[in-house]
Length: 95
Image (tube, rainbow, N blue to C red; front, side, top):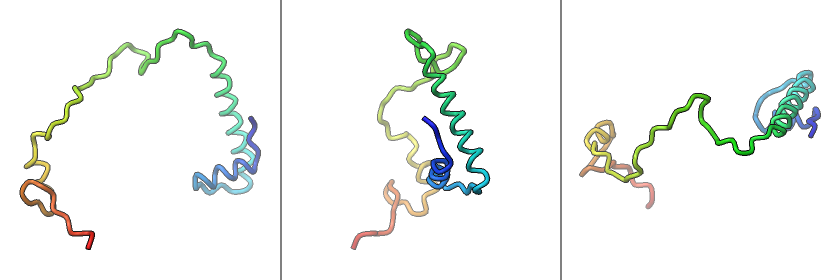
């Protein structure tokens, strides 16, 4: 895959990044270098390699997936502009 100047212009437009015309060709070359590196990475044999989150062995901390009320309803509602009967009060939006 090769990125030309017009594709670089389109990508810049989609990303909403203003790129002057004289910078489009260098940008296309940078895209091509990135794509070349990605193609090079695809040649690496990762068969049998476990996914990891770090190069040092560690386990992610996880909490039990349990639904709770948070045990802090007063603290949650303390900054609410309007709270009534333990709930956020909002203006009516549907007539």
